[in-house]
Length: 255
Ligand code: BGC
Image (cartoon, rainbow, N blue to C red):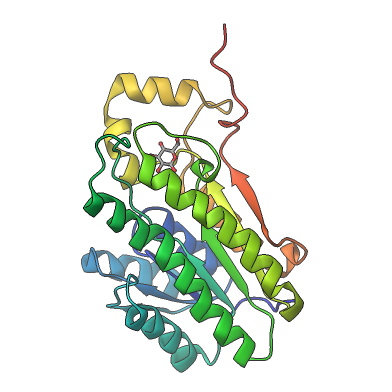
């Protein structure tokens, strides 16, 4: 269905889970294009790390919330690496606000980064894959909250729920062209998005206590799964979600 990936785009690739995804692809021998609207100072370390495994990272100053930004990432992959094999919609933000508190601005920001950028990122990638003659993989980094309410983080849950259906519907549409679409749904991960929780001893205890494996994930534990679902070894996985949550969704706080 797909070849071993050589040319990969990762959105939000210079921080958190994204950086671990870029490094995992580097270890697998792939070259990566990533955007970096935020934290340009973080690019060099990732570029060095991937260079050690023989791969290349091209960092593009691209805003993924507009068509021109997404197109710039596609073009950078094709210009630098000759084609596109995998597109990872990883970038995500959350506001930690309930329905009662969420402003229209909050909502639209979360939808633009988490959902619309994934939708139109998938479209840009799929059109490139079709032009190349089929094949290719789109991976969306969703969340356990694609399916599991997180009270106090409503807009985020709505966006992730949308990504859940994007994967299922686009996976069905694109299957006949040999293009796979897969969600990877992390639970709690030790990244900047969770800094406030991890720095508060009580919140940290409550969170880790709810995880059957007893600890939050490292970014690498998510990055490795993204690289796996993108590989030939996962060639029969499409239109579905691979949950990587240490069991948190099945866990129980019952007595
Ligand atoms: C959210 C985190 C949350 C975790 C587990 C993630 O998708 O970004 O804020 O701690 O899910 O509930």
